[in-house]
Length: 238
Ligand SMILES: [Mg+2]
Image (cartoon, rainbow, N blue to C red; front, top):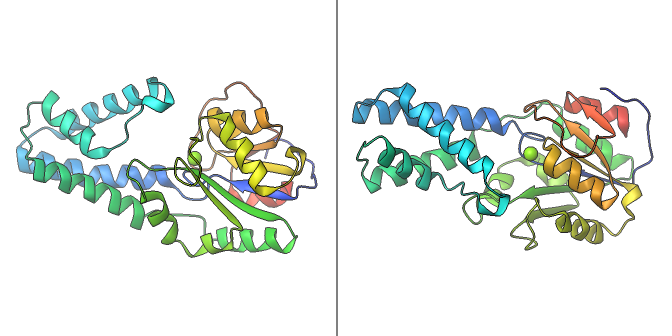
């Protein structure tokens, strides 16, 4: 952890993907299975499929956050068109289903996660999970429902579903703060995305800890109050 020093927080907000769970790895594993299958079935070089996939990924990231499309059926359809694969619509849907079910069912997390959440609650702090909706409606809730440790949260907010604002909109953090019912100074946000988790929490006046256990993004506008390399380091700041 980079910065030291404990502060008294009344509420702790956790991001979900690449903070509480290693989504990056689950996504990579899902692509590996899917691209191998497409490569075999349609006789296309797997390297070309990977290139096309990362191109789409980059295109989405370069778009304004409300213009990004993460529906993998659309991605696989685009790859099929660009590489002239001629994938059937049935296969496109099948691969999208494999993607969503494997990310839902095969996501890893630190084995101390539940103990950490229980310990935070024992300290009398409010536990909040704040995550953005997935490409398919209801998918994020289905993914959360799979994980036993999620039951320890006092409040779960899925932006774009529980509230209309997306996490990329600073107004969503204002709404979450109102739902918690505490002043911004009593709240800390822990997440992996400097653009959303850190910047938007700081705009609202909350403290923010950047989690770098699974993904390592460059800092954006604001400097986080803490930098955590492992979920266990949460104990050092709470
Ligand atoms: Mg995240």
